[in-house]
Length: 181
Image (tube, rainbow, N blue to C red):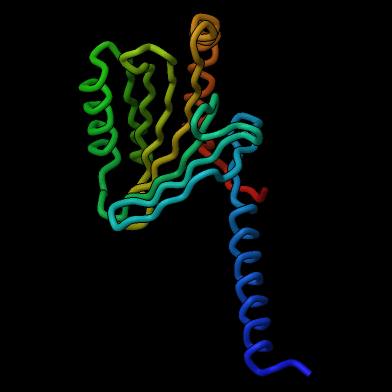
């Protein structure tokens, strides 16, 4: 016969394991599709000013990714154009040589920006597409990014010349599609 304290400990342990399984199960099912690739949730953080969830293809890591998608919500922001312009200002302040484009859809007010940038040490080159959309009383921002490191940067930039517009159009038309892992 088990003691009451032993039973309580066993029940507490089972409850914790059950809750852990539920949390892991919920995280494991969080994924998005973009350009034929499934991106699985790798990071999530929620604050008053924004919520961010980042996704990577299976096998990639946050410290050295090649492709990344993210979804951010901004409950206190309301203007896609203003938010997009703010990001472009920050990119240009960090890297004045960064190439960027901003386009607004007059039908729905969505704003797309894309830019090419790199860190000061030029250890990689990064291409980004951001789509800003009104969502309820706030904003939804979807991101697709690609990186190339070191010697791979030249081939990456050559391929990007032909792929850039297709990727921007895909983000504008479909955005990121939520799916299960």
